[in-house]
Image (tube, rainbow, N blue to C red; front, top):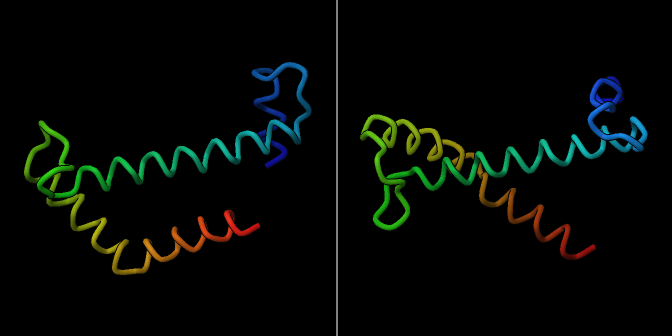
Length: 87
């Protein structure tokens, strides 16, 4: 992680490589959450399907997100949110 922080340090003048590494870590987590939100919005549904997507894409995304949900994704996310709120 520090190697990445060091290689990206020129984009963040005045910050140490450790601070840049931490910034990139949390930025990566935010990107993953945004991607997950977009996937969940692309699922087949009455109100939340993104317009303009083909049925093949919607079916593939729905199948993928169904497997995530069946593996306990919602419970894990809610557990993480509760642990942050209770600290």
